[in-house]
Amino acid sequence: MENLTYYYPRRKEPALLNVNLEIDTGEFVLITGPSGGGKSTLCRCFNALIPNFYGGRISGRVTVMGKDVAASSTSELSQHVGMVFQNPEDQITRMSVEAEMAFGLENLGVERNEISRRIKEVAEILRISDLLKRPVETLSSGQQQKVAIGSVLVMRPQILVLDEPTSELDPKSAKDLIDLIARLNTELGITVIIVEHRLNFILDKVDRVVIIKGGRVSMDGSPQEVLRSGEVAQLGVSLPRAVQLYHMLAEMGLRLQDVPLSVEDLEVELRGALRWAR
Ligand SMILES: Nc1ncnc2c1ncn2[C@@H]1O[C@H](COP(=O)(O)OP(=O)(O)O)[C@@H](O)[C@H]1O
Ligand SMILES: [Mg+2]
Image (cartoon, rainbow, N blue to C red; front, side, top):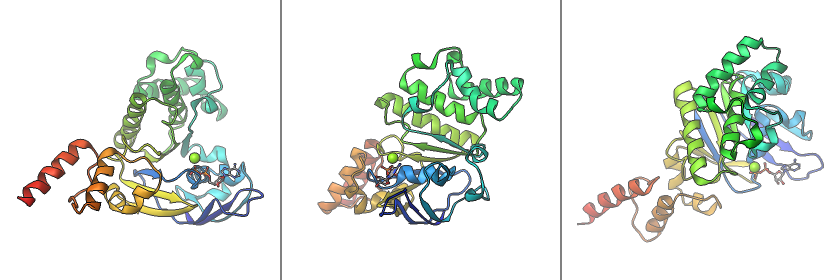
């Protein structure tokens, strides 16, 4: 994204302002920030839902896999960029899991055998092979969200964009889903861009954290770099307890070497710091 600025129709304030973001193949990028900051808007630009579907005024440039998004259709881009949204019900329309996963490929005119092959392969990766015949509406939210991911993975996208995919899930299912997404990144090499505001399960897995606030990129760096800054504590994102404690200790004058991402990390950091103090 180069100097990307975007206004929704009839809006005086831009939803995105001068966004510059370069994401490499294979990166696992967490996008977070306060509500209303522009995260979902940003996601909609990767497959040209903005401006094709939402209208409004856009300036600057979005390039995906070397293609200028402005010159591509959303269906063409869906072969490169898979989109998964917050609410699984929004994207699940058909009856069985199998039929749901076949839908996009049928629209592209992919041959029957090839469709079956890809569904089987993706179902194994997602561990939902036993659910293929089940009506989607009988599944749990966590399972439905896996089906939503399956429906885009059968298209073999190089890039997966997920907008708060765990927000409807209980903590256990959320953690499972994040672990699964991390595997898609490490084992299949898929570039993952994920929006989350619950950061507990994900900070130790991502390569990079981008904070979007007021339509701008307000921070962009490794988890360590971003979390070390005091700014992150003021953003209204829910930080892991260990990170909150790091900032509390820093205010009290105890600056730990690294930002702990888990309680186990915190223990290691504290033991190190106490050894120094003696
Ligand atoms: N469909 C829409 N039409 C008009 N304004 C919108 C629409 N969607 C979001 N906005 C506005 O754009 C800004 C960014 O919203 P959004 O991208 O949804 O933020 P986030 O996902 O970070 O919560 C907000 O001011 C919001 O009100
Ligand atoms: Mg949003």
